Image 1 (cartoon, rainbow, N blue to C red):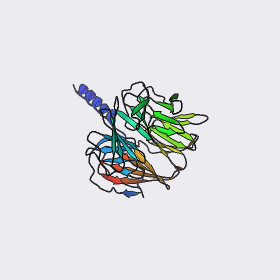
Image 2 (image 1 turned 90 degrees about the vertical axis):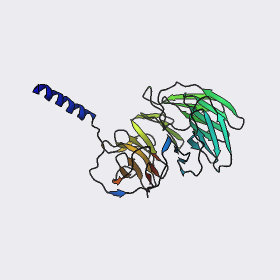
Image 3 (image 1 turned 180 degrees about the vertical axis):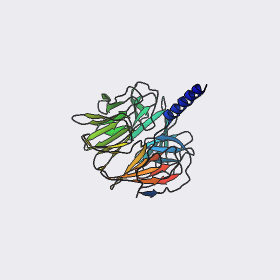
Image 4 (image 1 turned 135 degrees about the vertical axis):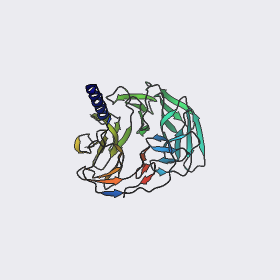
Length: 329
């Protein structure tokens, strides 16, 4: 009986050890940073370019907005003149940035990402469908059905307009390129190393090269296309190139040709988001830390930043936590 009890205790101990979670613990903390404790409503939805609060208020990549969205709508994107929002019923709302005018469209399925350029609205829906819509003529110009997927990452990128082409993110690791003159898809690139659960999360342009990323791959649409396989949380553009915030707690710097330049490890670090200023890269970490890192990753400082865990978002200059905000100075 004693032997049996000892075996049971040993198994329980091993199970508990197997369930333990490793978290980041700094070897040195360089100081304390403080939130601006602003009462914030609960976040209803998150998106690559913004968050929507339960009261209809929302924050875009440029900051908090004074307008409120109708009940059930979630913010997706904006241009100089219009804000874009959508709801689960397939409705799309185009709202004048001054709040003086609005237009509603009805699509076949929920819209997940959208970009408006002049009169052309490029969209991707929950069925992984590519849509080109004329908001003046109120007509669909083109659709293409993709492969339906099970999971959708709230960080799904918005379509990108570039020199007569529209780059569409997909929910299955593909970038689909629509030619506005050809009026059809001119190319479909599979940039993912995974068969599923690999939405396109990132688009950026530098020196006429378009970069894209999924959770498993960083890709450059250059004369000689190149890709890097890396399990990433996000990608940030800096003065030195592209910094990948990897899932293993490593920051990796790649130049504009995707050549590896430097890496900086924060063991078991869980990166939430990053803000690039002219002086440094600021990265929020899940256990309540803020990293200030030089653009070349050669120097860094670790600060304590006490915040409540929960849904998170950052604009180009401010981190938004459930209990307040922090703007790097």
